[in-house]
Length: 250
Image (tube, rainbow, N blue to C red; front, side):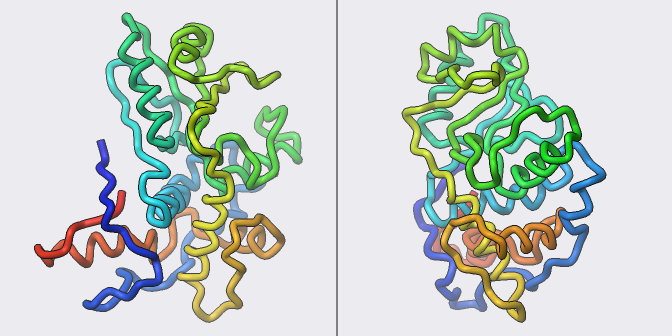
């Protein structure tokens, strides 16, 4: 399990030994490549992971990783296994009552870049998607959602641990309503990553609101991830050589 350290500081604080690690870059396969050619958000999982890490850099503990185990299995390449801390605790408690069952997770936290693709595929009538929220508005961007393919086996157990199963027309979906709804944090994290990696471009507002400039930036973003990723991840690398400074990051 990945530990969250409280020593992360704001992404703009300079490091004594030179600042963020890496070179600003948006080189790679543009996300726009997948709008008409793919049906899996796993194609942008590296970029999505950077966004999730940046969310936690800004607000440590807002997203924590959860892991596979005897009673939890990730299905497919698109699972980004992050939840709010309370949701993860409740998920593990439910898994402790598996009694031989395996909870098959097909989706958890979803970033704005993944939601953008799903929404576009829905608009195009592709990939068998019958409904998709606008980018920035998905329950999966809240940090408190799970999709479970064998949901019928788990409704009672998950409900007993605070996981609601009440989204009409979406039987695989569960929400941990006691966890904070962090929608918008992923948009803000993307905006910060974009600005960090495009110093020569006009910066987009870092306001957590999805709009035309953010959409245009998403289309140009590299599926393989930015040259400079999450700010506290960079600090962790830079500080690892200094024993007197605690590490931070996911």
